[in-house]
Length: 128
Image (cartoon, rainbow, N blue to C red; front, side, top):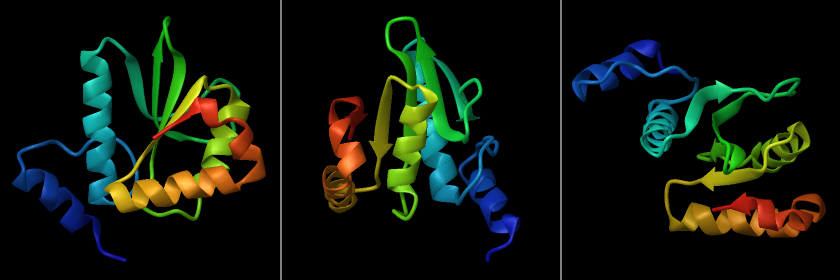
């Protein structure tokens, strides 16, 4: 496990304050970019947000009256992808957006969602 020094150094190097959140430098950077993008579009956003009475933290939770609650799941590793989607939908989000680092990971995520019998039923609420 690498010390936080390298994580903090990365943000210092690019001239940014370290955003709230957990995970690697890459994961935090994706969270911050998505949060800022959503805020520019007028969305209320929270890094590591939680639905009321929700069972888990969501990488980025966005809300507007038009869209309702939208969960953004930054997926750099796939071991929790399906369980994250299921929990987000169970907790009441209107949509789950899966964010991957490249096309290869995108295809892997799509395949996992399609092959899981529960998430396959909710494909209209899952965006890539």
